Image 1 (tube, one colour):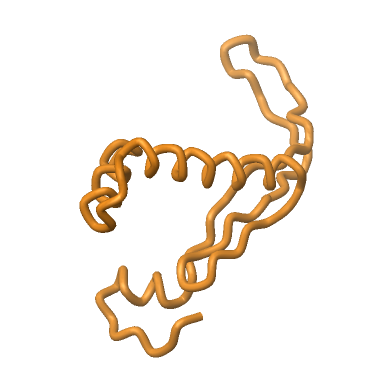
Image 2 (cartoon, helix red, strand yellow):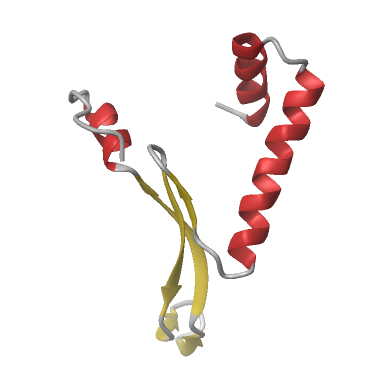
Length: 98
């Protein structure tokens, strides 16, 4: 599913114009992106958490040049689905909304 598909689905469900939905979806993604860049996690109850994961510095090998390189420590975005989301994905009955 693409962003355009999401916008079309929301438009069909809510009756709000595509243009307004597109602006809202874009703003939602900007808020998530900017928050994570600023070091904040995002918690969406019943859906999941966008978290900042940390990778430690490590030594790797460039096999084509037969050299050792150091990959610096860095952060990257991750997503952890909520318990109810996982239950629905598995086809289980959702016991509670977390």
